[in-house]
Image 1: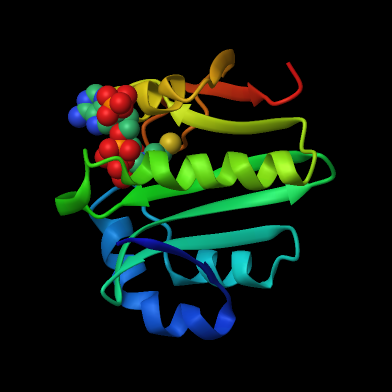
Image 2: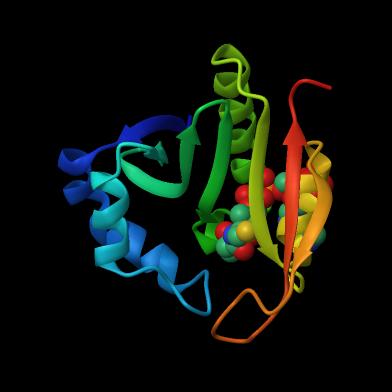
Length: 151
Ligand SMILES: CC(C)(COP(=O)(O)OP(=O)(O)OC[C@H]1O[C@@H](n2cnc3c(N)ncnc32)[C@H](O)[C@@H]1OP(=O)(O)O)[C@@H](O)C(=O)NCCC(=O)NCCS
């Protein structure tokens, strides 16, 4: 069974290669090591990993600032996609957010990323805006999505 683990500076070393491999297979402009190091040093930032049999299935990186959460990164290993793993991570995030009395969870997603958009919609996120040309690599627009937990 997959379990969620909090990845800190220490445990990151163990999962580093798996994380960087999943990044490479998931994004046009993957995060490199320095971006992860920055997040691990940022007191607002949290990384959770989804682990099964000691192997990393995926991860989510988010900031908690005041009563808001911002999701920065979410990826599932390609061979484990379509099995509800991202939904599991997001549901745990929402559970934790409710316990902490968080008002909103925010994220940006590429307008072409239909898979991720339907994932977020399936758990209640709504489109709340567009950032024109947000992604510097393809100049693609970002859809801003939010889940209002106080509705
Ligand atoms: C987007 C991503 C995180 C989804 O992870 P996943 O574990 O495959 O998603 P899940 O299996 O939890 O799917 C949950 C929901 O997402 C949607 N979804 C998943 N795969 C889909 C597909 N191939 N086509 C359309 N919708 C899909 C569905 O709404 C699904 O709900 P359902 O199973 O009840 O129909 C994964 O594809 C990934 O890592 N992609 C590359 C990185 C990325 O794009 N990250 C998001 C950046 S914003």
